[in-house]
Structure formats: C-alpha cells, structure tokens
Image (tube, rainbow, N blue to C red; front, top):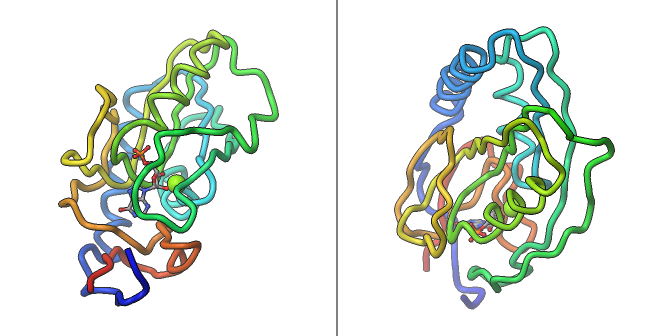
Length: 177
Ligand code: IMP
Ligand code: MG
C-alpha cells in the first residue's frame, strides 16, 4: 500500500465495543467459575480491548501479563514470520490462560503463540479477539471469544495501527484510497 490513503468512516463505535466487552467479560466469568485466570494481552494492539474486557471478568483470581511479537512493520500484509519480542513474566503451568488479541487475520500469529504457550503446560488456553477477519485466514486458528467479525479491509483504530499510527482512535475504521 502506498501513502495515498485516508481513514474511512466509522465501522464500529466505542459504545458498541464497550457493550461487547461487557458481554464477553460476562461469558468468561461464567466459563471460569471457581477458577483462576491469567489474561495475556498481545502488545500493542490488544491494550484498549483488554482493558475493556477485564473490567467485566468477575472472578476472585484474575491476573494479567503481556507478550509482544513481531508485527507487519509498515506493510499491510503478514510476512508469515512470528518473532517473540517480549515474553511472559511468570510461569503459566497449570493456569487458565486467555490470550487477548486485536484481530485474527491469517491466524499465523495466534497459531504460533498458542503452540508456543502450550509447550509450557497451562491448564487451558483460550483466545479472545476484538476482531475476526475470516477471509484472511491461512490456518485453522479460531478465536474462542470474538468481539466483531469484519470484512477484508485494512482496519485501524482502537489499538489497531497502520505503521504505528491510529491506535488511539476511539472507534474502529479502515484505510481507503
Ligand atoms: P495474523 O497473524 O495474520 O492473524 O495477524 C495478526 C496481527 O496482524 C494482528 O495482531 C495485527 O497486529 C495485524 N493485523 C492483521 N490485520 C490487520 C488489520 O486489518 N489492521 C491492522 N493490523 C492488522
Ligand atoms: Mg498486533
């Protein structure tokens, strides 16, 4: 993609995101009754969505951690290569891990991360993604909790970036042009 682009119209509003985060938080609360959960946010895109969801997880033992992995850089297509830039602070052995992502596109990133974390013998691993772009899928990976399904456009806002920009938009939009 060249530099002749603009941010399109609002696809999903902040209010819609808040409402969905509340529903998913309630679902997670129900699914993990009596259990402890570790919510793992994938930096940087998942930060806004993760903050919304965890406020609605009403369990006694909720902890959070973060991982960072290689992104697309200034390109809008996945290179298919995943690099761990920041790993978890603590052991996940025997824990219920919920990975929070901004978007599942090809599924390559999450597929890799899930396998990587499975090797540490957690009790369970679930995936909670703000967005799902099923047309981009190149693996079997499906998120367990999905905020919204989007069409095959390059999405920006609410944590999602293009060349590190637009993460601060309080809504979800797309690039056009
Ligand atoms: P995947 O490995 O192809 O599923 O892509 C995962 C990562 O690529 C996401 O965490 C995003 O950082 C980035 N990504 C994929 N699609 C988009 C998009 O439409 N807008 C912004 N980032 C995206
Ligand atoms: Mg990302």
